[in-house]
Image: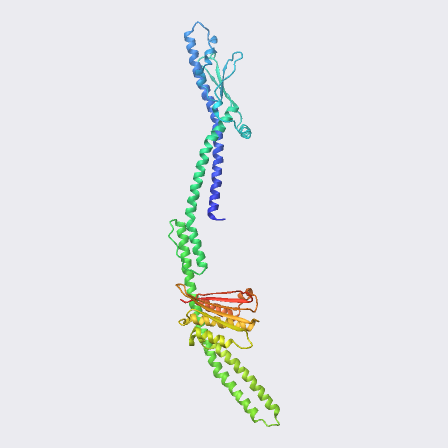
Length: 452
């Protein structure tokens, strides 16, 4: 899962938890606000009745105090204005058939769901009644008792949640959206870092990275740049070392070719001359000796042919002497025999000016692949295609394909001397090699940069 999505999912979870916490807090606050409204109502009504009590006591001094209250005048509209919505007030001592005086509860909103009412009632419990004496200086003045209507209290809590939750939800969505955009913008440079790492894996060891404003991303980018520089240096050193080893091996091959020509060639020539002399001077009665000398001549001739083939492979490649194009033509002509498969050479582009390591590498790749195809495959046709691609990233493409069947997987993992050698040569010039299955056989493709 992408990091941006993970952070957004965590942010969404935090927003949901905050919304749930806010809903619980609003519910508790709304439910407890009813208790505060009950106490405030009891206090307001008691103060109003206290003023009424003392006014009646002063104006009607002929009446006894126990006959002053309750009086019909206390249940008035003025008193109703003092009662909070959903609160009921009862005067003590209570007159016969007197009902509590309750505040208006029709404007509190819609009735809450049953599950909400049951949950609030179970968790928060009932509201306690609040009793307030009318006058602290007279115990006979009476008491005001205020209590909240349970249904009205739950209805008020539900309305408060609806009013607050809508605003909170809109703010949460806005914060979540803006935070998600901020997270996506902050992590956008990570794509550049990942792309740079992918280019490094593809061979571009010094990818260009933009400047990052974030200190952490800047440190990561600096580490990637340093890693790319070290990898490029290591690759260059490896290529130089491989090229040096190849030069040393070529020098050893040429030295070995001279030794074989000077020592084995002369000795085999001498043996061939002795055998021919023995065969020619043998008396007719020594037919057995003449036959043995003829067999020695044949064996030496075969050894000399093998030696010439070995010397041709050990000496300087024809690409250095004749050029790449002439060397490839000569190579295919030397490999082409009547009893062997047909070799088709396809040269595309101008190959005349290709020299140096590129020409030698291309020639050796073609030589090794043709030798393997002729030696191991039962092919009837072999195709050798060499194409020069122009442009700023010019390269030389070599493709050898046969119709002799075979499995590409074990060949691609082979550690034989031939394939190992061409892999080393191609790596030394910064190229690439691929071995895949073709329509009826195998296809070996090599890409060699012309700038090598």
